[in-house]
Length: 366
Ligand code: ATP
Ligand code: MN
Ligand code: MN
Image 1 (cartoon, rainbow, N blue to C red):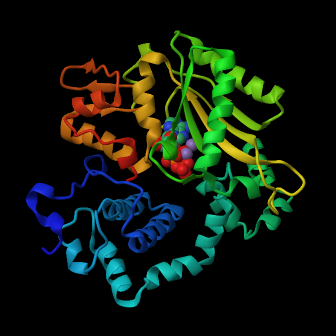
Image 2: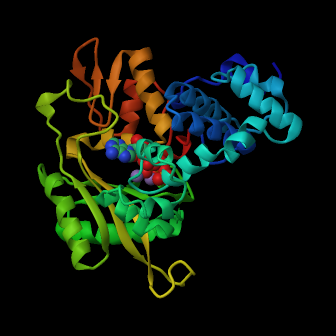
Image 3: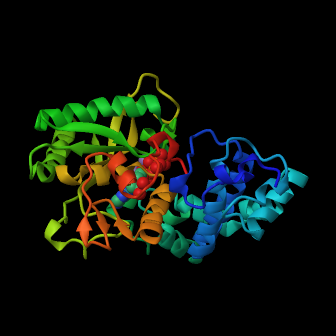
């Protein structure tokens, strides 16, 4: 096998949590194509095949250099016959006919458009598509469609929140969130998580995790921050989900994709220096912000879970379960062999419990 990674000591792992994936993607031409195929399969309800293409793309994202020949894929995990066919065509023609077809497909384009609205998932997007709707105008003028509160906000602020948030804007938001949090509880601290913690330059939102040293504070901090944003007239939308976390119900109530911590999904006004066409007549833009406030003793698991990427998290859990007989989620790490919860003060502790080399946040862009 021609690829340098064919050397056994440096073989690429099929688990994303055993690969170091920075934001420098040397195979973007291939991964963009594979991600389109994955997204299209997801839109048509084929979650399994979609995941296979996402895994193939993720392996390529971790490589230290761009592929130069198709043969180099022979020694890579997670690259099946279908992924290889797409890569081969890109090598030969510069693009993939399957991908071009998808990008021109009316169903794909409509699903992509509709699901780009905050609050509209694949189910709703499909429902609207099946009713013959193709544009936002058609959706908004269809009398039988009742938008929920989230979707209403999604359409209202569509132009602003569909534009990527920059790292500079994320830093400006951190100051606003920190100011509000400290005003409510001076001993609380704020950390940026999600894509920006992984070193991304742009994001679809900004994710923050709040650490409160006193027990019980995690339940009051988010409502208080929301109230403060309201009084500052910068809150455009808020969906507060109160904590349903109960340690006594573990481990039966855990190991789900979603967690039970107190969290909120917000749209806030961010002051901006220059006006653009989209923000003409106002000195702010709308930005999506997520806040999560776990109990102190759950902080490390929550931080790891909210740092992503989604595929990295998925593989971390899969690796723990299949290779180590341990169950990991945003709340705990549980050892099935000894029926015990494994303590962790840092993310390094969790990786160590799993017998994994530590992967830095900026290497988790799987
Ligand atoms: P982007 O830059 O597009 O925002 P991202 O990686 O930050 O990318 P998010 O959708 O913001 O993506 O999610 C960040 C992390 O938070 C992910 O790892 C995801 O698993 C986790 N997450 C998001 N929503 C929830 C939720 N409701 N419950 C638990 N975890 C969540
Ligand atoms: Mn995010
Ligand atoms: Mn988020």
